[in-house]
Image (tube, rainbow, N blue to C red; front, side, top):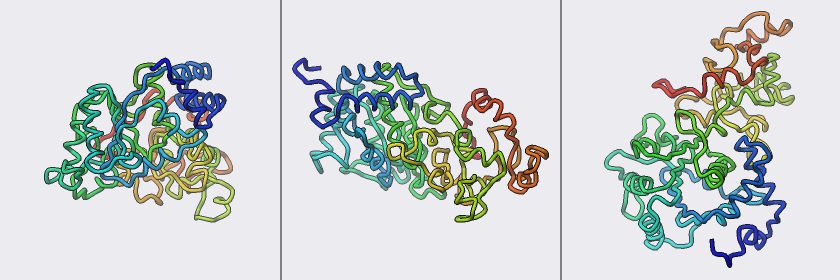
Length: 374
């Protein structure tokens, strides 16, 4: 780092961000990474002294939802932090150059910083007919992603589309869309961050973890960071108490809906989706879909467009938490006076989860994708 440079805090101060705001951001990153509060200072020191790492952001078959998520982070804006810590050399949405000059920025980064830049990929990569269904500057997405990611220090696939093809890959998948892991087989240092879109707090936490500890965070068998995708939403949902008591929303707008009862019967996929949505939430921690009265649609799950739809029908089978059971069967006598409600709504016993809410997950870990999805 240039000794004459005012440093990260100096640059942030020029943007109107105080030290208190900066430390609050570092505290948020520690919490998101499930680290003790004492790591706040270490994160602040790491960010203040880290050399600027080049970053390129590729965008293919997508809706730009992950870019929108990235640009809408606030207090202080993640953009402010990231732009000072990283050198964003290529991002179609926010970069100044256009056309050939834009593509030159990408090529220059790949050639001048081999193995030293971070590659973020948004969107699915079409493979059918030679990949002609997505081309940029005369090059196919499959050609670009293979060159860029194979030469990157770290590759982060953001959003459902970049993870496993997302909506473009939904049956019948006319363009042969796939995610990064299938487009570039055997890619090392790949972090998968599914979601529609991914949460920018989690993306930033991955980068902060690398800058602080010099390594990527621990992941599950599908390459998803455990701090963000290590627990079932259902286990931390604020409506969980209503689930255990057999209080369910029967239809949108009914009394149970107004009182914040469980949305499982309305199709909520929380019991089968791994994400930290309940704790990190969205829009600067303002709220999240279930908190706003809408069930989880399972957008963090494998091939969710196919495996989690119809989105407004309840899951036919609920496994992986509490006592595994069919959604149409319930152990009688669970909660005395609400036994009938439990049987009617197809709720599993919560006794094990109540005694050891994390035991089942910690022993078994997130599910491994099979041909049948989750």
